[in-house]
Length: 455
Image 1 (cartoon, rainbow, N blue to C red):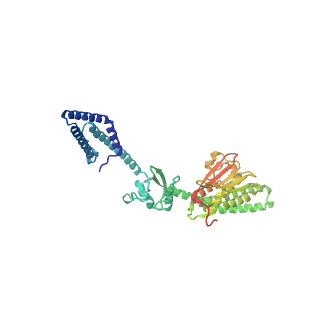
Image 2: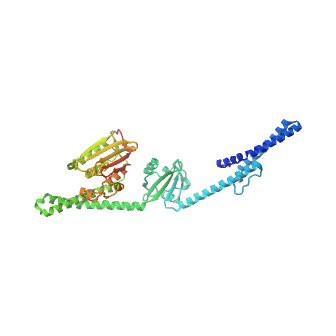
Image 3: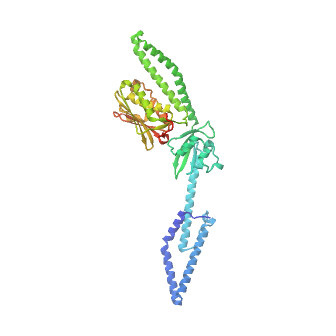
């Protein structure tokens, strides 16, 4: 059955209403004529009733023609012609006919645009997948068949999570937060690495773009392996050099005084090199080690006390004040060693660059979106232009300051990687002369308020 689209039907009604005055005038003239004939013949009631009955039959006949035409196969064909009529009904037939032609032209135009879009995506190396509001596959290009193993014959309207069954993809798809892409091995070839990026559009629909990043992944793996291997190979000779320098300085009475200063500088730089190698190995481990799905409950306040105590001992000569503030008892799900590394880097940095007698605050608090762990100091602060780059490896706000303090330039990079492995993020607020605030923002799903076992 052919159904007239709502838009076409509404326009037909507008045409009918446009000519209602003309139809009423004709009806009025018909009734006047029937009244005159009835008065002349003396049968006024019968004449008017018969005339109106004929008019009703004519109207029903035209409605039947309209119904048959709209429901006939020829009504929407290329060479369709409306029924012949005149007056109001002729205008209705012609108007609906014109609207049908306009609708068909618009439909053909939109179809041509869709066809061109599909043809253009067919030549892309990027997989393009359209997913409806129910999470089912609507359309995909040939690249998606090659990367994801989709088959048009039997995968149409299948749930995407039933075809890509990796747990990481399921978590990513259901979370609905697609600010960051997801990297996983291809479901059809474990040696192929794919990057998934999903975007919302329309009424709850999603567009998924999938790129083959196997080459980039191999290069990144080679880089990490190179850094890890070189750092590991340098660790032993640097340890030996540092040990001999330390032995010489312990026996400085037997050494010519002019060599004391060079030996101290050599020892200082060798220790700095040890710290750099240590941090590089930590970074390499964070990048190469997969995130464990087994999570330990960690008491946040106890972790903060431990880090503050270690920092106070390490920088005892600076006579700084360390304070801890928690709005309530919190436990985090994650890796305790990694979280200790992140928090200690923030606290040690604050103590390192804050003046003698300064104040370091460790604060944890509940937020609408989760929980924050903040390290706040009243040190010299940082210029705003440096803040976006602070988590880059080896980035220096002041080269001379980092050299004097023995910094490696890798601490905040380690913090960033640890937080990313715990679904958290780092926010930095600082102004020169007003101190700095380093805020770790943890999501709600990482927080426990009353765990059975806390470590």
